[in-house]
Image (cartoon, rainbow, N blue to C red; front, side):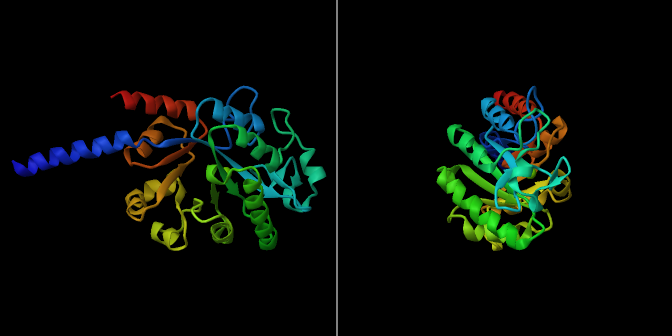
Length: 257
Ligand code: MG
């Protein structure tokens, strides 16, 4: 009987914890799947903030002449960013008619918005170029007073270590690749894991392992309601999605329960 009572209490307590700590919504490449928007556009950054996302994620590259730009792929309309000058890269258009944004224009806008930003450092071909990108990113984030509003993510193993080294103490740097066990990420000084839904479904125990290590868990890119629910049920801290309003709706319904 006692055991049963304890069980019931434990379930009630865990349900309370779960409802108290709902995952936070991060717009993947901004909120782009909406009228007039495009992935990694300024419009997508503004739109993510306007619908109340916790944060907006975006991807950063450095051009051959050292200008930081926002784009997902290594190429934009056939122009290879890392080996092309800014003049050429910035002339390229996004699908909504905007030109490729500079990181500077992104940070200027982010500084005016209440929501946070999740800055992804892309893996550059040249490690030297990547390190320069990191140093310049960190300086620019500082320049716009965004140090407390910026989290960093990367697939790059070197970049991960460099970001931890060059960002101010206490900055959250998450690892994306899914090939490190959470304690390895902790040992390297990471704030948490930001792994694919596929990787997390293979290792659901990594949520608790991360939490026990004092780290947080972000999962990408979660677009289907049942996958969003899986993340909520498993107690992840952040969900990165292309459908932020759908996720917000699902979270709101469960808040009311
Ligand atoms: Mg990204």
